[in-house]
Amino acid sequence: MELRWLDGAGVRDCDLGELKALRQRTDGFVWLDIPVWNDAAEQMLSEEFRFHPMAIAACRERNHTPRVHSYQDHVFVVIHGPEIGSGGHVHYLELDQFVGEHFLVTVHGPLNPVVPLEKAMQETRAVIQRLEAGRLRPASPFGLMYAIVSAILRREESLVGELARQVGLLEQRVMADSEEQRVIAASEEEAEGFLTALFTARHELLTIRTMAAQGGEIYGRAITLSTFAPKEGLKQMKDLLDQYMRLSRISQSQLDFLLGVTEFYRARTETKMTIAGERLAVIAVMTLPVTALSSVLGMNVIVNERTLWLPLIILLAIMLSLSLILLRWAKRQGWW
Image 1: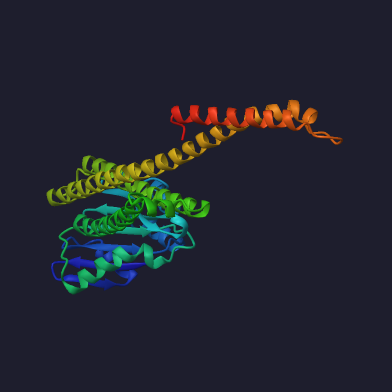
Image 2: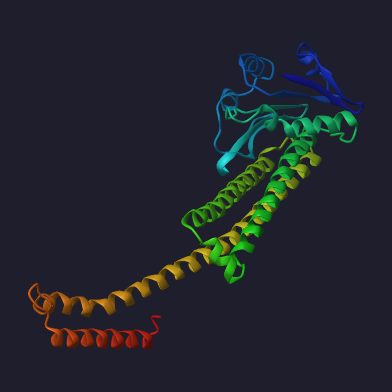
């Protein structure tokens, strides 16, 4: 656990033993950051801050959706940030926040074991660097919360930008000239790999869009419930709401574009399959009468003892004529 005191002079690292005394002061506020949940953290939140058991349980367990709880002197907010893993899997990086008039408590996790702790703490570490360098001077815990969540949103925006670049490259492949189109569908493995890339990008965009939409709903509710928040704090939460909604709309528009690219590729592939099926049907139609004649008359014309050459020549002529007639009919129907 990391304890810091923030006031007009800047930020100062403190020992956990100072927490009780710092909580009595009103000339600044404390920031308690908990990277990993443990029994000591649970005891401190229960005994020193006297947070509600339901909120503490939410910190202990993984929350699959964001949430907000309002209390008399603070608000509890759970949000998520994305981390792109292997195979297109998107990890949910959870950040729990207790925001009061003179304190901010942030709890990271729980995390998937494959996700390094540094990934979950990259936004808070960036905010600490800004505080220590003097580039950030939040006037209240709401200002500090605003800085942390804005950093998460900026990372989400950069991920959407990178996904938009990938979607643009996929769109270029789909809209390439006819020679390149044959290369895309040259083999089953290449076609499957291309579809996998399309749907992986769709899944990642959809996950980020979902996080942004849910985050916006949570902060919209927090604005309504935080009656104790200062005017500047409410303004900052409204800006977070606006950022979340804007990111949600951008992600949705990119999803719509990707859907169009996917549908175009699938339609073109299905059209090629339909044409191939029609050609196979033409071949089947042309060979059907030939097969019928050969099966009925073949054993009576070509036998072991002798071959009836005149009937054989007549049958071959009839088969050839039928095939040409059917081929011409198929041409008139536009089948090939």
